[in-house]
Image (tube, rainbow, N blue to C red; front, side):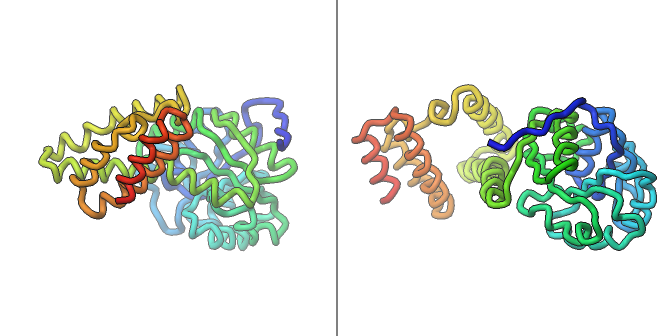
Length: 299
């Protein structure tokens, strides 16, 4: 187990700046301000005017890398919160600015390690990675979702200790991630968030195709999803699993597959096959029921 850096205080006692004012950047900035940390600048694209959402963060807004870095009057921890595909170009842009060397930089991309900021490392700046395992919407209160989530950190030395301190200050649980774990970590995160969003959209479409009103179809599945997630948190996935598969109800599963379109049937088959494996692991399914379900899913 990797050792956890010790923190003498929950509040960061060094200046922090955020370069990139999308949903993640604004949420991080909001959480840092709420934790009473020193957020000295929020960077936006060169030539852009601050939007209402960016102004609501209540941190000094600066357009473009040169203006942004010029506003940092002392060595600062800079969070580069641009879209994943723009991390390299943002690092290059920042590295070309006067005084860039004296700051520390971390990016928020889950699939890239610190070397995505190689341009900054080449001029002598410290670099790292900091990813919050959470989904953020456009709300000005999205930062409140950070408390209780986990923060993946990849850095060394003093910068690593600072990032752990920042994570704790905003209510996140920090953990160390290694390069070989990045892709699997992000794949799991995508399944736990993007896949659920897609499944809810699919469920809504199936209900509408069956004749339910759009307004009702868009709302009726949400309480069920929340309940399932709460059960997983309370019981673990094996014991939280409910439904026809864990009950060994092959006839109901067959009826489902008949009712679905070919596209939705493929998705249903793949997910219920995974549910079957989970049900078998939970030891709540007899061998004969498991066999019958497998035959239906493979038919």
